[in-house]
Amino acid sequence: MNDSTLASVATFGVYLAVMVAIGLWVYRRTVSQSDFVLGGRQLNSWVAGLSANASDFSGWLLLGLPGAIYVSGLGEAWIAVGLAAGFAGSWILIAPRLRVYTERVSDSRFGGESDSLTLSSFLENRFNDRSRALRAVSAVLIIVFYFFYVASGLVAMAALFDQVFGLSPAPAIVIGVSIVVLYTVLGGFLAVSYTDVIQAVMMWAALLVVPVMALTAIGGFSGLADGVAGRGDDLLSAVGGTALDTDTGAWVSTETLGWVVIVSGLAWGFGYFGQPHILARFMGIRSVRDIPKAGFVSVAWAVSAMALAVVVGFIGIAYFDTPLDTPEQVFPRLIEALTHPLVAGLLLAAILAAVMSTADSQLLVAASTLTEDGYKAFVNENASPRSLLWISRGTVVAVAAVAAGVALWGNQSVMDLVGYAWAGFGAGFGPVLLLALFWKRMTWVGALAGMVVGGATAIIWDIVDGAYLETGLYAMVPAVILSFVAIFALNGLGRVSAQMEEDFDKVVREIGEGRAPAAEPTA
Image (cartoon, rainbow, N blue to C red):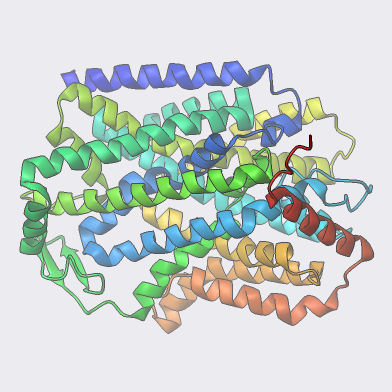
């Protein structure tokens, strides 16, 4: 066992101990289903902002994005541009109203404020849907797409363990899942959120340290530009098409990027309007007044981290004489090549942190959906908060086991799995949620139509496009468009109740009051 492996083992051991310690610390504070799912809605600005980042970017940031840049150059950065715009938009448009609406909306079955803990329960209460169709369909979409999303993190986790320890996928995934499940089961939402803050700091630090060391080694930005330009004419062009030819080991020019590639990349940004694990941070922040600061912290972190990840991809092109067989390993390979074994162990742990920071949040949301929107809604409405808490803990384990199976028996890359789940959530929930928060006349029929059409299109688009259309357009684009069309076309088949109008007006008033400056004290 070499020094790097020893350092990695020691780092992972310390990291595991810290994560479990946080889980134990908040265990006693997690006494009800509300605590387990949303932490009692008590996140401050820094925790909410950084937790949203860590739960979002995962292995895609440290593996998928640098790997995509390494293969195709700056043309792949359109995804990052779209994500930055979408993330900022979600904090501005979605966060304030969702925070208030989920707490204040009337319970569709029993009256009074519902304190909706999940996205599915909010939609049912928002549209006074006593048929429970909205809750059932949205819960199914969440569970189905999270199996793929969590699996993407486990694929990245397996690749990391193989890189560092030489472990095969099965034991690597078992070890990783066990760590995540342990602290998630112990502390629920608070444990996940607090550990996410640590993970966000580790991810950003790793993305900063490696480029600084690499740029020093290759002669700064001028050396980087010369090195990349020497490998391919269009690698530094935002609209130039380039691809890595694995047979020859060279970058070759392809057709100039057309509108399909650019629009597909930008369309990733709309996904933020429908990601349940990110929306949970908006729901769990303690006050509307905390949202602007949280949003600034979150967006600043996201933009700088994605910019650094793009630089990492380019550094890989310039640094390695022989093209990599596995482009998504460019960041770990740079760490090993540039740093002392002890430092490499610390930085490789940051990649594990990135993977775990998303897997834990997704497991928590999926388990909460199964418990709140499955067991409680359709099996036992009178279940006690304590029993629901323990059922949620059990479902975390069950969801993790199924996702591990998807990761072990699938053969897709991190980027492919993330893209599939991202489009499903973005199109299935994004248009519905955006209009639910801003359109007073929206009905349950429109919401149901938007979810079904958006989610179904995201699932079948690649099949239809590959067999008949051959456009190469990212599924998010047609799925979101058709979701909006379905909402507006069928919305009139439902009705808006007086309670729905009253709830909407109440939320608008509270948002206005929450954003207003505090009154000056009188003498």
